Image 1 (cartoon, rainbow, N blue to C red):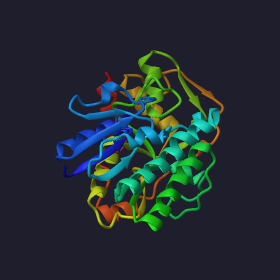
Image 2: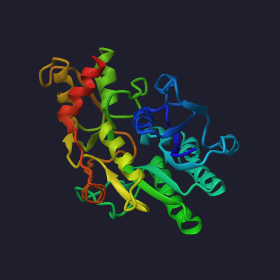
Image 3: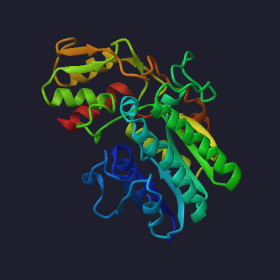
Image 4: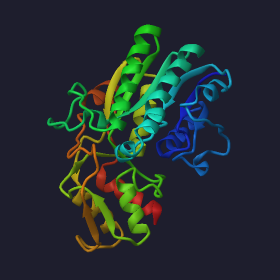
Length: 310
């Protein structure tokens, strides 16, 4: 079987978008997901799907012995806040799960992994835009476990020749996020409150600054890296390179629902642990290596997203 990809987290938000892109390009995609945050509705009817938790090594080893060209690893518990509620569960999902997948690569002689890390691994950076070589001082259990996954990739490359590409995701948004999960995402949380006709509950200051990136741009970057020699054993920021305050983002969203600036009720509460005040990605390296630039900036992306839900 040629061009076979193992996609973890394929029932999730980014995973379901990526599945469509890979399938349309002729890849055979084997999808695994434990459905803790992903949904069966996101899985294409023609997909080969296995409900597997990657922290379960035995379940992982039950997968068919295909000639996998690459593992694209998106499965994760992706909330700083939730990681403080249950650090051990976060460790299982994000650290042990990644270690199991790399061991699976070694045992099955799979020579490539694409790993979704997080901008949270920087902690509270003071340089903007933040380059990939900035010091890593993670401030949440989630961020610690994501950074550990990066180091696992580096060690498995050194010891077993498994090549990696690591993407540090910034705030990804677009149609298909899990609106029922108000502890994960940013725009999806705000959209959920508006769609349910509730005041927007914001945890943290309205002056916080975020680099947001549309899911289609994320998928394009991952896809470009798949067959790129220069992307092997590289780490890339995956953001838009532009930033907006939380207040600006809320105004963009509410205006698309027909509200004037400041009209929709917003309640501000204290922030969550591990939440950085400002994020902005330096995307010069990925732009140079992959000839990639984001195509959908915040205002247009928010319009597209809101229209898709309306």
